[in-house]
Image 1 (cartoon, rainbow, N blue to C red):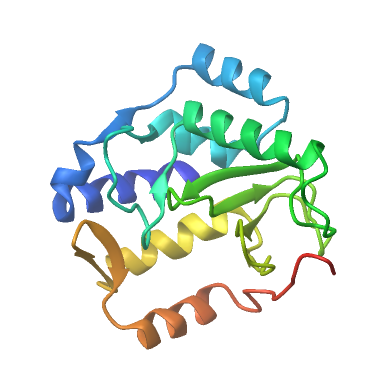
Image 2 (tube, rainbow, N blue to C red):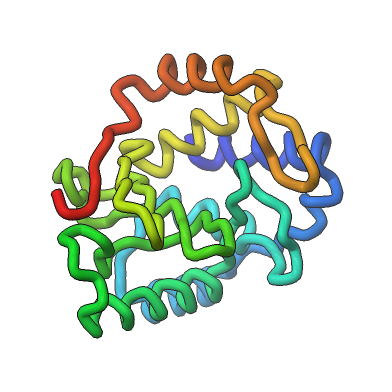
Length: 198
């Protein structure tokens, strides 16, 4: 299913966001992906591997949003961001529980320290593989999707349904209410609202 969704995503981006599509990096080879996973020190789900073997995020000098204003981080960017936040966490600068976890992998980020992370622990819910919001200056830690595969399915389906448009380089819903309805229908029960400290 993941491969089919990626084919559809590729087709939509080529047709509707050709300039952005050209700024996507080539996918990781098997060797490069294994090296990335080893450096990360975490075992990632198959859907994540399929996504990054399709495209290794977007180029460093591309500031357009992949979804909303969040950029599709390259493997190297993920490693850099995660290491920086891990170091701050290990230094004891985060005093609230669940502010950050070393098993969070920030793969969609806004360039300002905020990211959608793949949560390999399942903080709050006990469901590893969910997608959780990390904000550098806000306690919200909402769980947005139960898995990367569900996010990809909802995102691709909503693109094909004509719910998104490129606005000043970022991808935004044309109608927020229509997007919210679509998301509730295809991702029932989410997002789940949590806060750091809880």
